Each structure stands twice: as C-alpha cells, then as structure tokens.
Length: 188
Ligand code: AMP
Image (cartoon, rainbow, N blue to C red; front, side, top):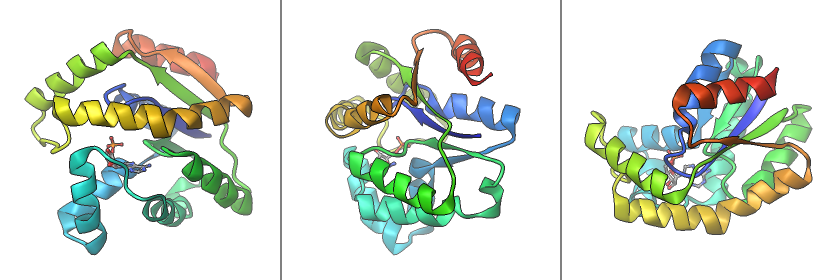
C-alpha cells in the first residue's frame, strides 16, 4: 500500500504515520526528516537546506525530487510507503507521478488531515516546549510563515489529488486515537 499523508505543519502527520507503519509494515518517507539528517551530517545539501528550513520556506523542488527518486527505489519500499511532507508543490506532485509511472508504482490514497489554524498554533507551541530534540523551525513566527507557504504552494496539490479522485479528508481536530480510527476505516 502506497499512501500520501497530507496536512499543514502540526497536523499530526508524523504521529499518524507511525501508527500506519506499524500496522501495515510499510515505511515512512519524510522529506523533512531526510533534510534534518543531511543538516545533522553537515553535508553540502544540508548546509544549503538549513537556512531555508529555518525560515520555514520550501527547499527547491530539484533537491527534493532527487532525494525522493533515490529513496523510493530502495528495497524497503517494496511493501509500500507513506509519503509524509511530500509532495508540497504542484511540480513535486507531477514529477512524482512521472517517477512512479516509470517504476509502475501507484499511489493508493492521499489522506488529508484537516486542522484549523488556531489549533495548529497551539499544538506547535506545545511541541516546541515539550520537544527534547528541539526543531529550529518550531516557533510561532516561523510556523506562521510555514502555514502561509502551505496555503500558497501546497494547497494546490490537494486540488490536484481531488481531481484525480484520490483525496480523502479526515477531521484532524479529534484526538490522536480517533484520527487513527478514521484513517483505518478509509483504508479497509
Ligand atoms: P517537515 O518536517 O515536513 O515539516 O519539513 C521541515 C522543513 O523541511 C519544511 O519547512 C521545508 O523547509 C523543508 N521541506 C520538507 N519537505 C519538503 C518538501 N517536500 N518540499 C520543500 N521543502 C520541504
């Protein structure tokens, strides 16, 4: 099963991905995690990405697509994968389709976790306070920019999948367990 988890920053994509990887024995592919790893390792890519990530802007489509292209062909993706935080632009969505077509792989479902802005701000502020591994982009000013970027660049991707009849929306304002239950309902 190949899925895309879709939603604004702080919607709970990471938490839900964790539930799904355990249940379906598939892997999570988070472009955010991959970029943070590059930053940690101090690679050229990481250095270039860090200042962009710290502002809450998007890393270039070329960098992201080339990372995904290499990751998706790894053997651990054979049983299925969850894309988390990708695609974030229309260009990424279209490029992803081209890559998957060549590999004869298909996305089964795109799941949108729908949460409103006030709830997001509260959640991310809490996450910043609680997180042991602090994220440089977890503060409310940067979050506001991330939400703006989401609306401008990423919402068109939702329309794209809606038109392809692949989009399913879940009420992300419920507690974690109920969001999980709703996701599993639509996957069975
Ligand atoms: P995330 O952990 O998914 O919230 O991503 C953290 C940051 O990494 C984002 O704010 C972007 O700067 C960058 N990033 C992650 N995924 C992408 C993507 N698909 N396209 C562009 N930038 C990304």
